[in-house]
Image 1 (cartoon, rainbow, N blue to C red):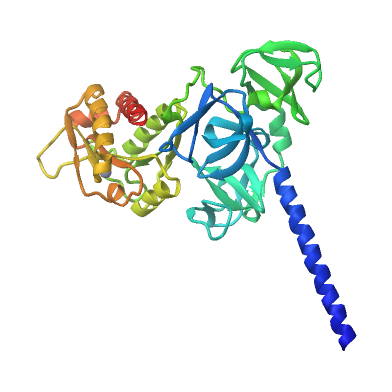
Image 2 (cartoon, rainbow, N blue to C red):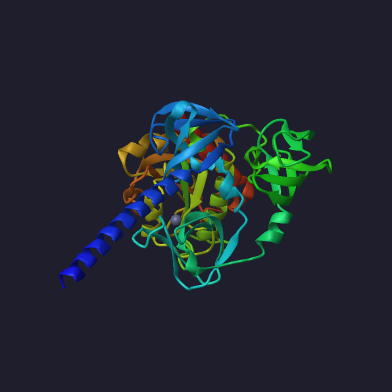
Length: 425
Ligand SMILES: [Zn+2]
């Protein structure tokens, strides 16, 4: 009995030691797999916190390599020159390890699979995905996949995904873009090898195969050679070189009003508000993305989305600005015309004024000003929020403009101009 007990104690001690060794090993493992990212834009602000409201402490420039030490809300805390640390917007840098996987797509295999904010079953649910939904995987961690679906990024348990195994084939015909001026294309996959061609910033390269940290590529001129994965990007760089502006670091949520069973107002010709708000939101998104901003939509198709889901998305992404897009209508024979900008909190009054001024200057219909209104999506929003009424659909004059893509484009330009001023003030 006593011997047994001692044996047991020894066993316990052994297990504790083993445990300790494992913990130490795990710590080394975590420390050893520090990921690095490369700066994509010509200059990116480094801030003292994860968001545009934090102070700029420094700037990093295109091509610079940063080591990720922490990730929060799509912002990376990075280590850069001389071991200084700070926060950068994740969408302005590219992760060489991640981008190698960008093209992996998968299909949701279970009806109602939950897309979560973080990689845990405790985390907030961003959306429920239907069986058969296609997602693109950017990263995998502890049995969870970070995926993008309908402009939304979140985590899904990897067991709920069927990963297509055709990625090899997709990779071979995939394009890369040079992310530096005078990007070297070399004879072999090492930095000492002879340069066979230099390509300019933004030049497209076709991947022939992957070789460690190098890609064998074919240039636009037909030259075959090797390029290092840290000087290229999967995202096509902007032709206009970006400078560090706050809007480029901002997360903006666009909320196309109504959707699905909720059709909203209607033009005399039977076009529903839900269609016009979606088309407008898509135009605004495109325009905003030219600035480098991270743009999310509360819906990107004709779905019914509750008001709560819309404001939840704003909170969970810590949006810098939430903009709800609507078109008005009047009862009976009273016909009104023009745009109105609504805010709820005083904090959002200056934003309302800036955007409304641009709408007033750019749009061909009357401007009814900006004012307080008690509306759900602005009131229940933890983030700066506005609701724009962009014209009266029951007014023939306003409706004629509202349904046209040239008007929607003007709205897109006006909102973008207003937001640029807002973020730079
Ligand atoms: Zn509406």
